[in-house]
Length: 462
Image (cartoon, rainbow, N blue to C red):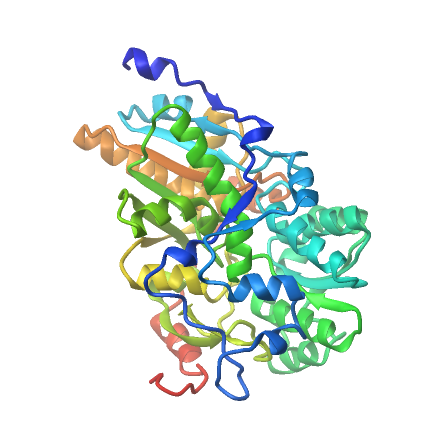
């Protein structure tokens, strides 16, 4: 270790002045823009007017804006951010020592808030715009429960009603996450449910289903559309969400620049794309502008491998097939991960923005099995002192693997990964792992092909 390296603290803290005042819109620097959302009825790009029946008006404008590089963060949101931001960038000295690697490992920790994850960055923004529009409340879905928890906090802060449809398997496995949402005033319903038309339809076709994000999205959208004064909000996938989450990457880059550190690789877990898109945003921007180069790795579960085994095509974002069509890497909207999958990241598709970047070869993707993910989580927890969320642990898995490669080759690479949150509400999954009851599930080619065969017919899409 050189004298210069010893000056880098375990935690690189920033001041309140370093909290971003503007969100960075990665799409502004993309030569190949993400494909537009389509109206499933007409097959034509959705207009702002059509989208405003589902989403808040200001969020619609952000969703459709692919030319403005920086968008002002309202002062009220900046003030809310100050309750838990800036988030620390941590040098994983203890993990480096345990791995005996020459690699330098850093992680951006987003768990220093009651919701326990990065999701609050977008939750407060979406709730703010709903309140500004004069709405009574919002509806949403949640998988592992992090998004629902974050949104319940934001809605309580702004006195908005919240209806959450929670994937049934998570509703049953994570009762404490559910109760946090209810404590903050949210109404939480296991999905699919009998409270909506689409929920009843899904249950009739799949009576034993444990649910999926696609199912929950369908129910939340239906309730928003059928109730005056409500709009639907989403915790991942959409361009607007990646925009809000750019605060993660902007702070990370500011912290690295403070000590003259340039990462070789940036690693993030990927389900719908919110935290990954936020973490990589400014770095990918530099890459797109030709100012710097980075190896960017998206890590997804082998049980829901939309990047690594999916098809790049227009598909419904929901199982009930009532939402707009998005061009993305998808396993098919009818794909439902096995109930034994406990690691989160359960969405069948991927952000259109990230899908375009991946298709352009600007980033890579890897899939990992959940037992290996939890081995990495346990190793990290024992030496770094933080119990990581299962989702985050996908990134930890690959960060460890890359650090061990450096040990073999002697390369001193600098690795940055996103620790999106804590795992203290995920103890049922940890219990299964510790008891040796956790198993790996990998869908067969036939499973995926069956779902892909149901992709919607879109002009120009085979």
